[in-house]
Length: 514
View 1 (cartoon, rainbow, N blue to C red):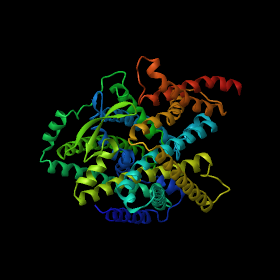
View 2: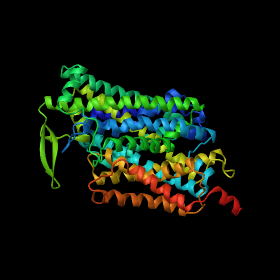
View 3: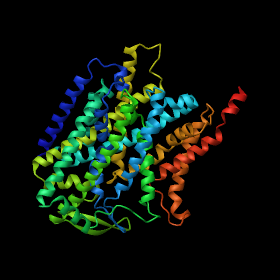
View 4: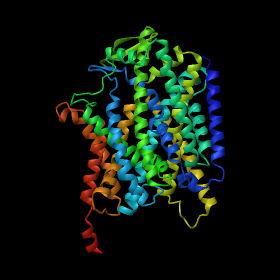
């Protein structure tokens, strides 16, 4: 398919987003940018957050992982283990965290830490969110930009850095004014297009292979692609670890994340915000099932077109690669390679639109949330008497632009690492960066402990990820072959919680000293 045609659709899609941004950002102010004037429609927020929660990583990596093989067989539908944990995590968000945020009438959720522990804990929490979201968002961005680069821009002779810069400029332009008010609508549009592309690809493969859904599941089962539960207790993928880890990943990466929560608290009433979270949980897991089904279908399609598995020695270890037309298309390469090289041009165009629809929600929300958190939590912009609305807006726009530059730097760093399968890396990174947030909020919610308003709080939150890394790297030797996987986040959170507990003091001590 002509890369010029594909690129023209990318440009057309961007123009559509600009039009939506133009109409939604008129008469906007700083409150519109930060929390959508707390007047967002919960149905739109719930549906749009599906795109934000899934992102381009899910769109590319989850289907590709189905046929990824190891010594224990295919990964198959093992990602459902994590998805079960997601459902548990969303219930905690709906009925524990959201009532807390609404009761305190928060614009930034990290103001809870200010009210509970003081300024240092508040700044520390906001700092870890900024680190977490910057790393996570740019990793997701890198994956999708890399796909666009490989299949379109390389053929046009455009360098990767130019591609990344132009896409970030696009995102900057349509979020510059409206912020949350705009992305509630653009995310809804993008989620619709992403799911439409997913369904069209599924129907095309079923039709091409002359299979019904029942027949397709039967063939997937025969090939071992339907495996879900990993019962190897020493494995990183052990089902108990995956379910519990999935729950905590959701609590941390959604419930303690300003990007995700600023959309929820932009809804006027708590009950509607809770409806939003529960609706999101059900639809999200359903869509993940569709992505896994698509992944299995992709490998069935590859087999039908001459694809086969081959054992290859990589870095001294024998691994299985899926070879199609003399090219390894395992993992992140599977979906785009098969669609753009074997499907009709019309389906390829739909795939590209769906892919960038998965790209933008995870980036525009992150850019907006990081700007909001830095302005409100770090520099204390909101409510400053020495700055009028116009001056505050000038600061906000400057911060927004600076984060765009930071995104570009991080994307180029991921490009230098050149990792072919990034979903596991994102979960690992989340374990290190969200753990301190989990520890801070857990101490505040479940204990009456007070913390000193001292930078020792920040030090504890920095030491905990370091100790978690040391434990993770040595667990196999120390624990008789046990490997730490997704539960890294929980270990990090516990270490943070324990460290903060020991430096804290009870309310009675605080009262006595006063």
